[in-house]
Length: 386
Ligand SMILES: *Cc1c(COP(=O)(O)O)cnc(C)c1O
Image (cartoon, protein in one colour):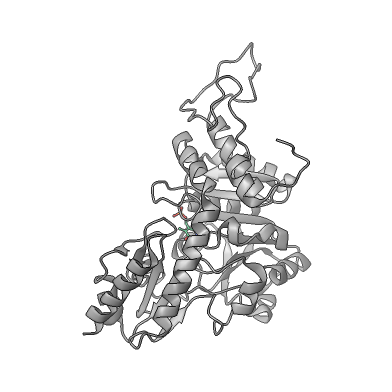
């Protein structure tokens, strides 16, 4: 491929890091299910591979592809999103360092800060990231990271990446963006000034609910080197088959996201007009507080929709009354999922500043036929409020 020609997202998603195999011509990188590599004399490595924790060709293909689709210089693939987050935090922070986190971060991210980071000496403050003055006020001399999630899980809050990047950089801190909900197809944080992008590739990037994985992508070669050192030293790498499944997922990310967005917009529209629904949280709705920022920094508004019912009981009944939307955790797969964050994904945030409303329902709108999805939800809302 001609590297001088700037290729578009969909082309990179299919080809970056994936030249046809020079020996066999295989158009897809094989699953190198191998731990070690023959050396041609001591230190005589063929292609730089010596042991698969340090590097594996299938994982390299994924890491190159991830870096290219996020517009970064270095991509690193981990065993899960949380493993990626942990490696990043322990690369950048030391005991006593401070991190600003969203006051509605993903529950697992919050748990990592509160139950692992804090006992280890890390200090953090949950802040509403939509309020730039509040973020500025939370900055301290020890602040090493502003940790952004946009849209947030599960409240679909929006943070202004470019503005927060300048707040971070003025204070000598890094801007980290968890881009899991948007995916690199809808949002390019590094181009907006972020230093590191975090992914749970388990979600939209993998896209088929068949693999757990995580990634870091950075715009700094120097930070990339330090992250790669920690990836190898700490060891929570993606295995070859997981890397291969994730690569396969990325190829169709663009077309899947187009359908996720269109279906989610139709679902959000139906919910706003339903009398049993108290509030719909979707950044594509003009009355969403982050709508203007979302228009500025996202190609479209994503496949996640949350809504509030009149009571916890009604929310639980809706979750238990769908047939096509599967009751389950996780998100971003081709199949639609429904869940009750307060009792499921975000149960670990109960009693914390990140507790989510008990009347909240979260949808991961899949790519099934939109008419079937709307009928299923209408039926569940009717059953739940009968
Ligand atoms: C799921 C998720 C994570 C954690 O990723 P795992 O792959 O489950 O470890 C992090 N951030 C967000 C926004 C998520 O949805």
